[in-house]
Length: 332
Image 1: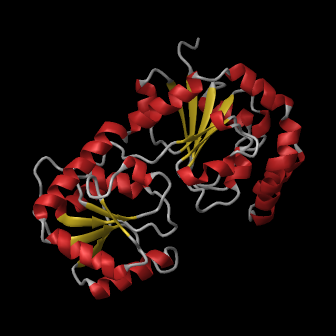
Image 2 (image 1 turned 180 degrees about the horizontal axis):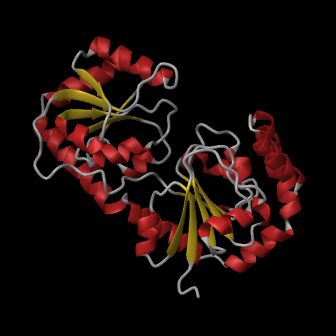
């Protein structure tokens, strides 16, 4: 017998442990590759019918079909709306939408009213922490992450241009908690002008961070010169000048890095995002919301979901996936 509300967390794991700490029974449904689940398959994998299905964005083709007819409350945490233009239409099949990019919130109001579209920024998980004993500094300026001219051409070109002006730039891959503490300054690059997770992860590791001005609420969360430093990606000379000024003032860098880490610990860890989700869900009349969606299921499918599923049916290489999307478009 159920003793507490259950949440099926589909896709990413993100803040599942934090939801458990808040009293929910989490039913993990991780996704690491494209899959297509209907309601019966969700219940089979979860072991029961959940009270809430929460899809934590994995930047995959639509992993749910028949979504408009699911009999439980549904929610989508959309992270990659800067990449996938079909997300706002598909999101209309859910009861709730949380978007990580604040400036994109209006895109999700096609059917969903404002009280069911919420800003849920990125965060840093508990694995992003500086070591107990600070390591020696090895690099003046570090970018940590993948750099590939084919998959991240803007990032690759930007770093190549910066390296020509500032030879002290280092580019490495690995665990952020091991890399960022070894740099005097950490660099973030937002190729698609998104407020990305690296901002929160670098600050959580105790880095003195330089990040581009991107909007999406970044200036509401962190202040330039207090928690981090903001640069204009169109002004490479200005960035180099800022780097040189900061390298000449290590005490200022240490103070800003400490303030940035404190800000993340105070408001941008998994528990903070889980609490926001829990507050929004608690404020809804879930039965009424679901019943109204079920009444409008055909209209929702025809108006918002059908073209999304037809697109993915055409793009699918797998015959079974093509058939599943075509059936979803037809309401079967």
